[in-house]
Length: 394
Image (cartoon, rainbow, N blue to C red; front, side, top):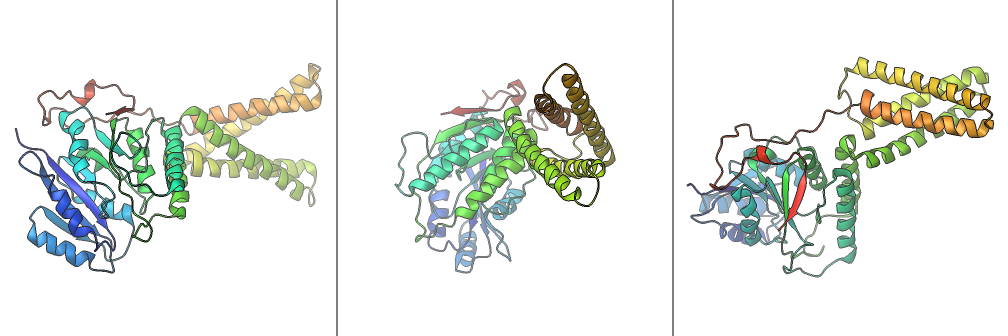
């Protein structure tokens, strides 16, 4: 039985102080039982990082160097490295050595045994050594992880961790977009969508200060919030998506009122009301396709717009008939209108989620060739697993 091969992608930007030590420590985990491919991606460093990386590649045949001519960000560097990886498994290693490479061999265990598709190293699990640093950073990490879990329906403890180890065929089929630190919430969103077997294991962490070269900042935290919503909302759990629609519906309703107030100054109410309604409905559609749902999930553009228009007309009819019917039944007009509006709102959301922007049911990932053996004779085929995503802690 051949030894597994691990590709380790090392994004590097101005890491001349730690790159050589990082590569040396990464190489130390290799051996007869684990083949290594170390891919250093220099993201247009302005110091000696690229030259040092090239010297390492000449010295060690298992080290490869890829370079960006223009600085693009950590996410872009990772995407470059992922595309060139040839190992059975792929891991990420920051060049600053905040994460201990010796942990990677332990994280690889569930993948080699066939019990996991992805292994994530958590800084908040286990009894490994941790450098004591910024309190509010740890709070921010936990908040972002909580929000990510709400949108993905996973139960991770550390979404923002660097240490994620993948089966290569999984990673290379994901279309990634984030260029900077938004990579973490984006990749977790994709993994959740693929309904993989995810294992989480405790790791050590030796964080560095900003004086020592730490690069992540507050704007990256706000970008992470955006990425959590952007990459998860179309297939988020029903309560989360409904909460998003409350926001969208509220914005459209306020726009309706504001437009009516403005238009009624220059035209009759009989014209201002439908004009404001149509414009607000168009805004609602634009917000839905940009924030909540995926465009053309089921229909062509013309079919989607036509179906949406039919839904708006239908919901308008429900609102009108409900209001009139309740008033005729003796309800106070204000209460009748509020009740009819709530009913119309519910039909609006149901119609959008299950008809206009209906998403195909998620299918669990499976290897293209299910007969491909793993490195353990006890490995179970992934087809035998349930289709539900899960996080197992070891």
